[in-house]
Image 1: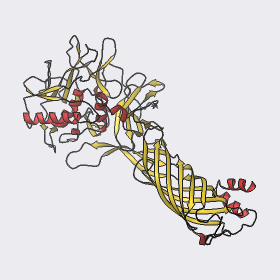
Image 2 (image 1 turned 90 degrees about the horizontal axis):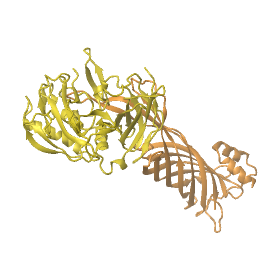
Image 3 (image 1 turned 30 degrees about the vertical axis):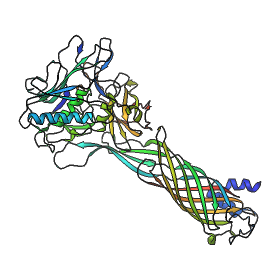
Image 4 (image 1 turned 60 degrees about the vertical axis):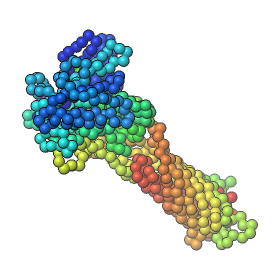
Length: 343
Length: 243
């Protein structure tokens, strides 16, 4: 069974508060919406958010363990040296973690009655305030599916999902990140997907129960959060690459581009995000890179892009950029253009 | 003037240099190999200064590769990471140019400083990608390498030949290495070491000029891939002048 962790498109729209879904702007998929003028607005916190945890555990997870796992997830993101973001634990609450109450609430809920979310381990709702000159998150809630078996054991428990790993993923959304696609999946006979391997916490499909690997951020996650909340030296100590992905002279929307540092092996990715096939990957340590382009043919494109947006092209094969890509500190390498061919 | 032109031309390659000696015109006079006499102006005398410019070729070789590793979805005992693809990196052969200045401490030993410039390419080969099995090799980066080193030269006068005009020598030294990956603003400082030898061939009746061939193994730390210590064999031909 596919157990996904994803942001949710919620159904409530207020006058000046808009619900966003992960779309992409600049580097990395980020939580964003188009405002009335058609401008893409990226969701970020303009001040350190305060979060509350519901005073409700589930079998195998006490309230104290829930709080500890959530705090561990926040710590993973806020301890990134190249990012400037923090969050404050506000205490326990009895509020339901999926309602507009001007509180950022994280907790368990029974999702068995929510169509389309029965197999979802957790999701994140956003309220984005666009009424100021600096759009920002107004409220963000994280809902964890109480119908799955959970564990907070640092070593993992077979048959139980690691709460801190899933919380870390959802907190990535809480901070404003969308999904990343660095991973391999295999399709089961029933059509569901299993992860074979992945290299990003923000992959839309969770590891199997008992796996605690997603407690630790990868270079892709670190680059994403740093790009969203850059520390003072982030832009000068790292560089970026940019270019286009085209097929038959037309831009490809939704192609996954992975850059591998040949010195460290670090993998950092993004997508082509417009009809011209443009992409940017930022947060790259200086040095030579291998650039690999792949389609989202194995994954559900709606886990990455707004289904109401342009169609994602999934009909092309893996293609490498065949030329030097040397990223300078504080600079961009343009014109890393890749032409793909239909399969 | 004609000797000068012949020496320059001969300096281009080892083969031509050797031919020049063999076909060299007048019977060369043996150069002094013994103890320096007072007022000695011979090239091998103590305190003689030798200047040379060289051009050569650095032989390439395989460098460490790198794999794009995914974390496997396993629980319990850890398993090796899952490679999405693997990159093999090879340093290509490249021309090297530079100059040397040396001073004889004795007839047998000299100290020599050298600067060298070379610009090899790093070639990448992709393998292990089941979705892209046949990716042609391509240039990953070009690396500019500057080095400055000091070597001890041991002249093997007892093995001199061609009437003492051809003197084999051994060399070993070390120094500073600076590398810049083209396109990057980052400079990588390191060390360079060399060991090898060659032959100096003095031309002309007084032997105040000539040519030499060097064959050395260079150890660069770090290598052009900025990893570990990399060794490359290099050969070079030089034209030199003795003062």
